[in-house]
Amino acid sequence: MDPFKPYQPRLRQAAPPKLTVESAQAVAFKALAFIAADDAMLSGFVTATGCGLDEIKGRLAEDGFLGAVLDFLLGDEQAVIAFAEDEGFHPDTPMLARMKLG
Image: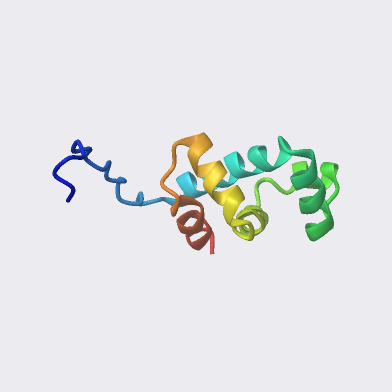
């Protein structure tokens, strides 16, 4: 500790949340909205999944599809961090949601 440097306490990050299936689904819906808000990311998602925009709407009730949304997001660390910051989530929340969706 530098005695000449003013003390600045570090903020502690809250513990990762405990998620239910319903809250994990909500995280996935928010992740899809985050992806859809970025044209390049949405294009990459459509290319990676092979789902057209109409098919995406039809599959929103499937946990497997919501898991694929989170898988896509988790493939880009910068996107995960940006998503967590935008939503006010703990950075581990998307991964925990993915595990909850099976």
